[in-house]
Image (cartoon, rainbow over all chains, first blue to last red):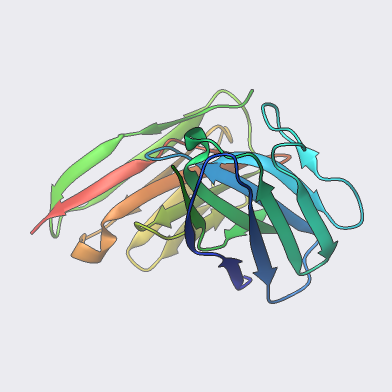
Length: 112
Length: 108
């Protein structure tokens, strides 16, 4: 398995602003992923963060709204841009090892 | 797209009872995973299943990878209060597809 940390753990933000979420892993991993979990819902994949190349976004998610960086094999960031109340969710990073994924503790975002 | 049907949506049980939940899909998956999520936390991996027909235990938890590769179940024996939470199944094939979760509530 892998030990994954996220910063911040939670935040309250004003609409129109942006928040960058950090994900740190204790070992080098090839595959990192970003998910959104809306209140009371399951997890939805936003994008796959590839080291050294552009992130791959799922249908319904675009780079302008959710820019992602992956500067090395242990770190990634997700920015939620120009936030609205509909962006209030838990944002989770995960890492892929074999056919399995391990999740960070999540960042709880509330947009007012 | 791939969809998973997870049932039941919620369970209200007495402490000490056994629990059973399952996921089915119209698609074949290479791996089935079961996670538990506590309030305010990320999902924690409970059991990973890699082969059709595989039956795997982790303490009081037992899970099976269906022979058709389109379904999986999770059983919890002799439930205790700390089993409360949301359980998610996930199928893996070119990424993870999650079920909608089973909310487990235990009455003392």
